[in-house]
Image (cartoon, rainbow, N blue to C red; front, side, top):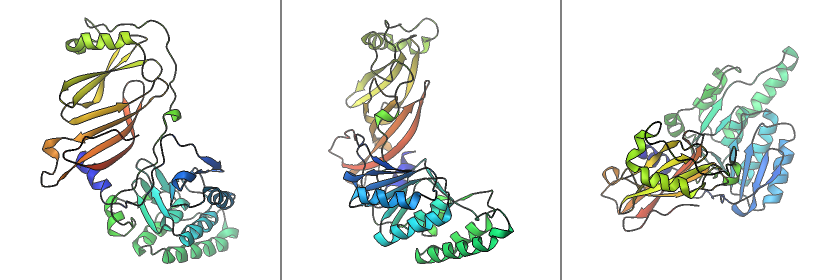
Length: 343
């Protein structure tokens, strides 16, 4: 997994800005502005009001650097108008990992002076509601093809668009993104828009006494660490409303963890830790199901010819019985440095 992360994160441009995890944006329709970071985020469909909303967002944002796209598509004419503005202002377009930009959204993406799609980028034919609109559809298609030409889009991209039925979607592979110039960038990596802890409040809070694990029955697999786990449970809730994260040291800069449901004593394993995720650091809160985990690449997978090592930082979301990855990034540090947590 680490090798895959390194491949993704070191082939893309270093000019992208990071939205602070504490930042709160101003919304205009489906556009959200983060002025301090010079970023506008499109979340949702593109409708007839979207060009005006985008103009309002740009006016509020001041100096914009990047447009982040999280959209299933929508009105093609509106997408063309937004794309023309992006082209004129030479903005960067970016699709995050685990996000989707499809249909009309792809037109906006291709307008980027620099563009990177770590997530899914999809295209298909435009649809017509009947013969009366066929002529209008042809005019719009001509505008799309002209725009793609102006955006220096590879002919093979257009072929995929024209050959994929309107009721289907073609998503470009990583190899196609690279070989066909879909991703166009400079040097290193964009930083994804990070989730805020406030985005993921607990499902419920527990304020009663701590219920201890059953190490002779249900939780017997964790018996070897029963003293530390029991102490953590007794100390009370520190994560996601009713859970206690119990961190245990395993040597110099080595740690692993368990998650205990304080309301019933059930113990869960934590997916990271030990020498596999060296220098593991965790940030979590009683008031959120989100956790931030940062660690150093294991020694035996690192490139020893380099004078730097790779650190991985993930935002992971507690589902009630385990974690799923929300976002992920990598950054380089000197071998003599410590892999500190990215906030």
